[in-house]
Length: 468
Image 1: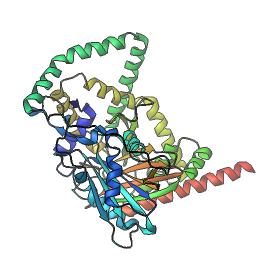
Image 2 (image 1 turned 180 degrees about the vertical axis):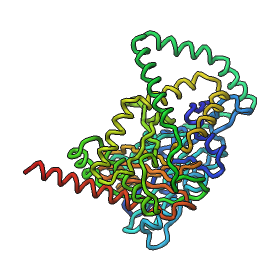
Image 3 (image 1 turned 135 degrees about the vertical axis):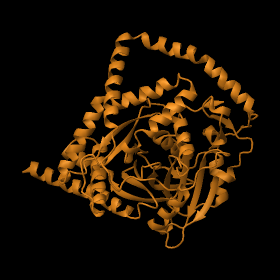
């Protein structure tokens, strides 16, 4: 039995606490046509299942919650339940695809089954077809979710042969088995904790530095968790979702970075800041400095750990400079903010908290996480993720993957979220909104589009000025 780590378990708790939350992450992979038949596509996925054992495992909750949920093999696994087929109504443009995505993501994954779904979508304009991939956040983060593409798809037009499949489900553990294993884990916690500590104190200099960094980061993170300035961007999330996206050129974004400085992520956050500024102004609200704090996940995976299917992320809390009028100054402001956050070790502190939680009793960790989660909700207005995707083209059944549109879930009082994904030379902002409160989600999307265009124009002017 493979147990959820504390962060993975937190995504399960989030659904238990909020009846309207659906903590699945997703994406739309759009392919050149023609679309494969359902049976052909089903066979292709079946040929890759042995490479993703988690796809044939379901969650079991330990009675009395004395231990974290565990992954167990599903003896009734049915691939046809997870691989589904649908088609867009004419004309099959972005509007029809976005509505389908919103409907699919408004529904929770059924915990009686492995927590994933694939949707084969036909009828896209231009003869294209799509795969909507929906996976619970307790299973993957952005980086490991991206690795699934490399596993399921091919790196060349020639399909790889199916993987030999010798899977036979183990007997499902009883409730008594789950309790006994959880009790044993509790008994071994002091031993495992002592072993971990022994490994750390071998390097006292590094331990001292890490401790100082963690304390400083925790202090900075605690000071950030103050309620955001009141605006229409927060409220209670309902069950249904809206979804849209903005396309941009990765080369354009890199040109902005080269001319105006910072990182690709700084340029992305500057454009998102422009979007939220336009969003607020369109609602008759004056943007203020601390009106849009955003949670920014940071991957803490070591190289080579991309195929470990669990969450390995830390987080920082950044304030988007929506009060800054000039786009170049807005970019400079977010550069300064992100540099300060990196120096403050906020991510180090949040990573340390998750690591420490592995050596504490799960009931205590779960209770603490619930209390900690409720306290800063009003301090987070949105979430912005940025995940680098494959640089080379991918293929499915010899069809080329054209673009990838990412989706990030929203919950509790966070009404909007933005996931940024790069694939080959394309960059896409996937924008999620609560259905009841973001009927104007396209305004946010247009604001991000305009924000990128403003920065590209400013970068070109900067380059011309230096040539003279």
